[in-house]
Image (cartoon, rainbow, N blue to C red):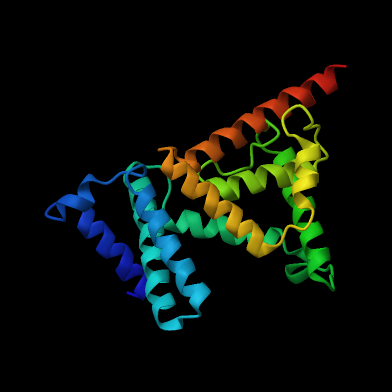
Length: 223
């Protein structure tokens, strides 16, 4: 067996009869926190340029991927091979300039083409239930809020009822990376002093903004 086959066999053994009680108890839901932790540790090695530990952390992330695929296979949903085949087909499909006859010269052109192909795929697939359907709900709150605002700007969505736009523009004046970090840190410290959860508060507010923008956009369509 190659290394991937050995890893799959190891995870299957841990889950199987006579395996590890902890591994046998896990579900997709219980492993979410493990996945977040492992990805965070991988990001840390990337930030530090620590290649030796990056290799180790990539392995820990890979365990999570194989583990989830094993759970899905046990339930008859899909296998690791299905996962690999689907993502490979997507990569080939979204890079016609490499695997087809087209040609692109810049990264900007590649990104535009990627979004065009992605939009076409979704048009022929399931109908999205909302404007922000593509946003992963388990993103860290700050990334989630940033993604919400990015979608609002990218799609030119009406947000004046949900966001104090003049206040946002005022905050932009003289804002630097250091100043932003200071503000975020001080807000976090103040939240902790008041017994508030800054992560939860930001996620809740960003979600409220999403819903308000969707309602406002819907009203605009009807009128």
